[in-house]
View 1 (cartoon, rainbow, N blue to C red):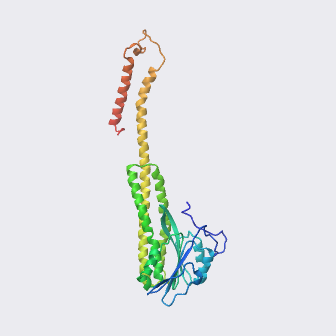
View 2 (cartoon, rainbow, N blue to C red; view 1 turned 135 degrees about the vertical axis):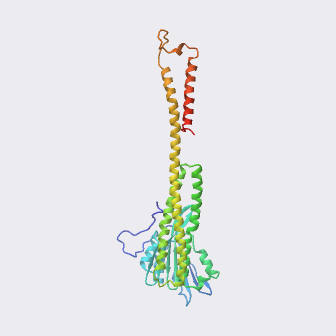
Length: 358
């Protein structure tokens, strides 16, 4: 259940905006910065928070933090860009619900990005700040999800260079939302494979796989459903830092989020129906086993009755009409065994004709 609840939090009663050290052991933080405008891009030295320049007129600054920043790094970012302490607290305490907060000088967004790590679903926290001429992105983990966006900026960028910092803000959000597509494609292939196996040869291992799929879909829904609402809120609210031209692109990201939610809901329904099919097939299999055992028991009941009679202690008696006649009969036991065989075969044929055996 650790993947369902991974939120870091302060002890109850801690003052709002308090930054507590949560940096895991062995955490390597890489800070990259890029200055760009309509004509060129310029990469700044890595991990140089203390010497970040002011963008020139018409220029923008993108600072990307890969990993979990410590309190000193967060405080440096806060002082340099005027970030609100409550927003910095949310960056430090990962596991936040996707949300948007508007402050005096910037816009703050938290998103959850689904990633597959050795076929296991995890959600990485993405924190984004938008200012008048800067964008700050903080991504949990070791893998940088914005490599392609950086390449687009360096290779010409198109609208990324021509438009303001809010368009880069949109491009990062769109990248995070679209990360769900390859994850859902992998889950869809897994569901399809399980569905075929379930119809052909159901087994106990499938129950654990189905429950794991349901848990992963719940985790996806928990992170991506609020992201859809977040994008709706961004389009409805009059946010000064978002230009009207950029809002059209946010509508496209919202459409992607709606499609992803529809896929998740469809997969959840399919998984639930597969679970019902599995339980029904296991119940049917148990019924088949019980039917076979019942038939075997029913067949042996009259045979056991006959064998029990002939298993009684008695002696040869020629004076009584009711004495066991087979004792002195040459083929007594073969006759009795033959009668038992005829009874068993007759019962089998009767059961088969009645549809008890298939």
